[in-house]
Image 1 (cartoon, rainbow, N blue to C red):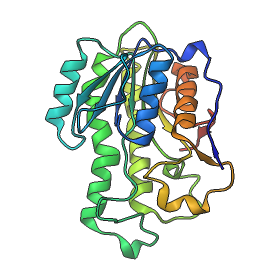
Image 2 (image 1 turned 180 degrees about the vertical axis):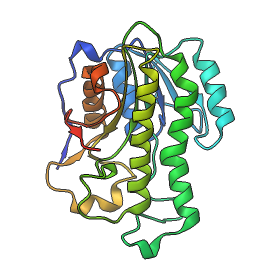
Image 3 (image 1 turned 90 degrees about the vertical axis):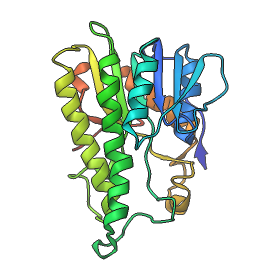
Length: 250
């Protein structure tokens, strides 16, 4: 059973303008649609330059592994700067089928580099070009999809080496960004968001082991994460939170 419904009426979740990087993925598309439903103008970024069909949603193109396209996207978005930025990109299994390593014996240098490029470096470069667009003197937010398995202290099983490490590195970068941004944007929030196990292509190979009621529809997870992000304060900045608003230990 996958959960599909959630109350999404909280007024604090309404952003004037939301930018979503990764708008054609299952979670990213759902975030775009939910943000628009809540009354936000939405910039929807994807490699193809497409996004959900809605009059409040404006698509744009970027390539997560090409900084020039990210810089160009930031220049475009400066015409209507977002006060909320969500990086909804990420990879668990590569295009060739290379999946999470269950043993250090399976580590591969090129696969590991690619996973870090997509899960850690890409979001960091987005932050480099997009954080300067956030408004000063009023509440704003920057969030990236993280994962519970990125927690070092909560790791009791091992394995999934590249994915775990790439998310742990992302979490550290988010902490760094939060510290730096707080010097100029006192009301800004930077956070990692764990969406739970969502019924998307990314999680499909691993859904058989998901407990009943713990597989979420993208729409459910998107609404939950927007609720969480909207309820965070500057004191929460730099931390990682799950879909229920519970802080995940570093």
